[in-house]
Image 1 (cartoon, rainbow, N blue to C red):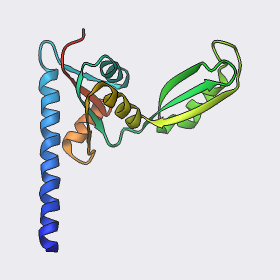
Image 2 (image 1 turned 60 degrees about the vertical axis):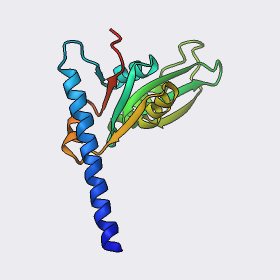
Image 3 (image 1 turned 60 degrees about the horizontal axis):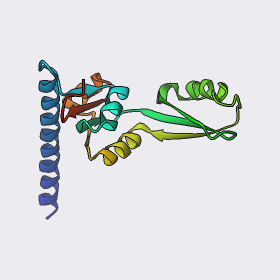
Length: 158
């Protein structure tokens, strides 16, 4: 029984690798078309998700980025920024040193959310599928070369 379970786990792992390979191949083939139906990079992907143009979002499991938001305690205006984990402390310090652009206060509440969670929430709102790719596979490493984030579009928005 254990042997059967072990073998089925290997088969399922292989099936997932095949699915990831197909997704990356689709992404790359779309990219080479005259009017590519892809987007990559954080701002570009978030833009196509919010416009409802994304069909599938490809996210690397090693996307080591966060969205930080500071909300002013005086006027409740908030401002967000996307940062990498490696620069987190420095970026947060610099972000909090700037006064509120609306009321010039320096009293903030800071929230930090993993970027994958932010993208997942946006994807749910827009009815977009999200696929998290392993960074151990060749396909996952290809996605990392595009910033760890890509989208295959439903239609062209340019």
